[in-house]
Figure (cartoon, rainbow, N blue to C red):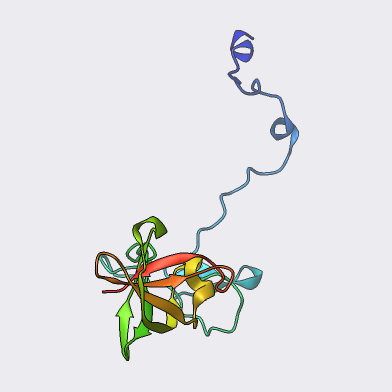
Length: 165
């Protein structure tokens, strides 16, 4: 009784339960299938394929490919992390027949004195300046001697100065 209180089941006392009142012979253990066979439909033995050899890697059955199931796991190297790409800022325009790279500069550093021509076909991948794509900008000689292309609002969509090389 104490064993039952401790959570341990001592089992039924001898001479009780259905086995003690049955006049049937004790049940025999079910026969095990012969080596190299597997139980088939209806309990008959179906010969199995060749037994795997020791040390051989396990094989997976091939599929014909027209089902919608999931593919079995196969040992492979872990997937590489997705590549990260960085877009380099590009700001260009055509000045005096040549494509030049432009550098945005603060308008406080520009004092354009004399007109020096026109920059055409402004192109950029920088979102802040993309509204200028295809625009023509006036170019001025800056006090420091370097030419500056000038976007002016409201003529252009934004006010920004770009230094030419």
